[in-house]
Length: 479
Image (spheres, rainbow, N blue to C red):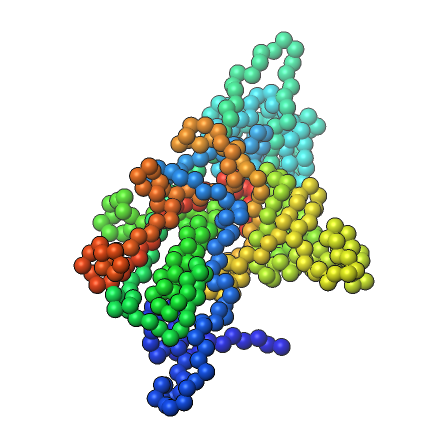
């Protein structure tokens, strides 16, 4: 059975004025007939709850700040592990190129003379002792324990797929200690808030004009004055923008033409901000980039994602916000694991008793040492938001959900100068003792309270905010 959608021809529900294009004509000649129709005055709410906000209220906190940017730091890894390129297998020399996270070396590596290392590559994993390691030179020389040289173990010159892990050290009797210490490293990130604006304006005449449709809105507005609905819809849409910006936004790059102008940087330039999806894309995991992951349609594919988490923070509790298709795929995956599924009824932790309707959905499950709590995300389902964009996207550009760690992270806040515990996600908005720009609104014009000679009422909305994503290495984007 095919399902198609219907939109009345020539109807535009986003217009702010009453006109023939907004409503269905009673007949071709409109009101010019003598019979009284059965008029249903109440506006039908055919789309249910139209707003999509609510995601951030479940997973994040909000904090005020009085600066143009927020800076935070995150711990580096504890152990020393690198990617290396074989310079000369016969001489057992290697060049330290990257960390195991794939980040190019920008500071001196921590491998020192006397360190014992594991070297993997060329189909072999061997142990060796570092015999030469300069303070600033990326080249190191090792002495294998089981071979004369790296070439004897099957390593080849120019091979850049080798991994090196420091697991200890060995020194002879009566020798001096290490001559170089290793300093802890950390990553510093920054984000800037952006200013979000919207407005609605109605003339004094229209504000005093009654309509024939009894309006309704998400904020509880009702009556026969159209501007009540129009202003309420603008406010509801603006509140959705505050959440969508924190999810979808990204910073502009050097090649962007957003701020061409005179070519001189200005405080008024549009600089963008890093949203949730961009933060996960650049610093976290994507299911399309994890071997074996495909919509979590079977347990083996799901386990591949858990393996990626094991390599990082291994946060025990995680929340999954997914679209409908992925939610049902996970339900089917879990149901197929149940040995009683073939009998039509499932008993156990979900308490499906004989006297209740069969529950075919799962809100949570545990795999290995991880707990996952699943929730539908309306933003990814609604045709007028990401749901419509995903329908037109291809490959990894279609986003089906996000896995977000629960709990808090312990980070050093450079603005406050101390360690703080915060949710992994939180929203920063501009505020001071004089001005709060969290979600600001004001009315101008001559309708109601007179503030100007404009024969209209203008409702203004403004916010200045950004998203802070801490520990993005513990997040996963399902695409």
